Length: 272
Image (cartoon, rainbow, N blue to C red; front, side):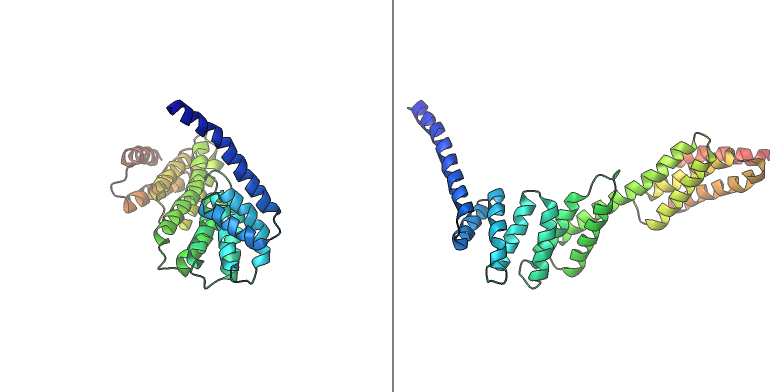
């Protein structure tokens, strides 16, 4: 009996699927936009966002300026978001806010629009143009809707993207420091400049301690391999870099490594 029931169920699945496909195809071809609207809303409520999106694309222009227009435009933007088409989602949410700035859904639309750009942000090693755009959108949302229920999530995403941008900048300085160990002085000079720019641009960064240590490394490498004419000046600069690290981080995790570099600097100074 159980086997027969299971077999019957398996046979019914293709029928249900084909029926569903036929209904969807009919809806796409239907000229009655009210019928299309009802079917699209049902698909949306059932979380069949791909089909809902296709139908909403067809009917959205017809509902501009009409009472249902606000609902259709939000569903369209959200369906793009749910199918992970974040470029179109961000664009459609922006259109929604411009068209319905006083909507009850305005804060949610602003948040989801910003979140769409957040999802477009690439890993830190790539170009961060989209990350910058996402940060602008998130900050805009945070400022415009301070009492929104989405504030906590928006702030968390903004912190994550800020850290990503900082990491890219920090890794550039780190790479120059590594290259500087090959005794090519120009790399050490570039590393010091990159670290200074990083600290200036990101004073509260979680990588600040690491950056200050990189400056000690680069300054020491530069000083030890300099000509006699510039050596004293650069050794003093390396000591200043050491003092800067421990001024801000008295119990720095780099105490041992920085101490070893300082010993080299002091030994070289003593020999001058």
